[in-house]
Image (cartoon, rainbow, N blue to C red; front, side):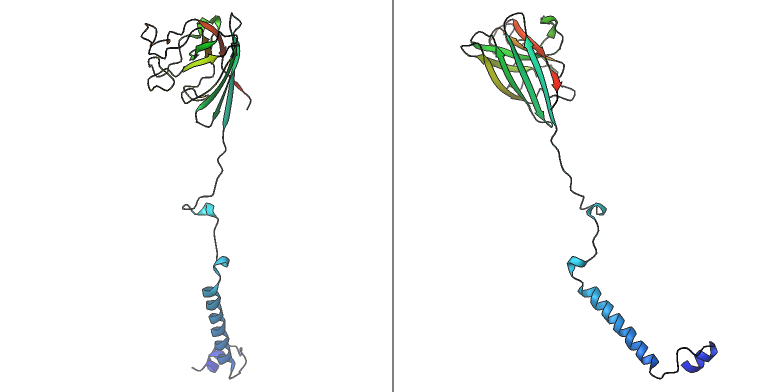
Length: 221
């Protein structure tokens, strides 16, 4: 059947009987197809389709890490004129920075420790032993074997004032071994750091009596 008879069979005379119709239609279709192919293959890369990075597992969206700062304080008092303030600061899970200022001391070194309990019902005596969650013997702050609460000595000047900054990674402000609720104690004598050969060297450093103490409590950042 010719294209003309085909239109009659369908009961329609559309399109008009124009001998150039089919050739024009084919030309237009070819031109449109060529144009589409050109656009598809020459689209600049900056106009190409893209998807948010969150939809691509290999390119996760960026995120910000915010530092978490924790702070605490202990106010030390005793039966003598010795008193002071200890502040603690910790960034994220890093080491804790301890700033110490104690007055009323005799000039020279004094043992300075964190004790296990924040109980001062019987003065500094009820704060218990040195904080020792790992069940170690007494030592120096830099020793591998030491109590977590072994912070060495602070040195009082001729005016009886001791100021020190201690950075230690065994006295965190949060977690299972947090020091919040425990107590700092300043002692009468020098701590021998476990090396003095005395019967108390490996338990207390033979640092003598407890002059003043204070319970650690969290403060606003």
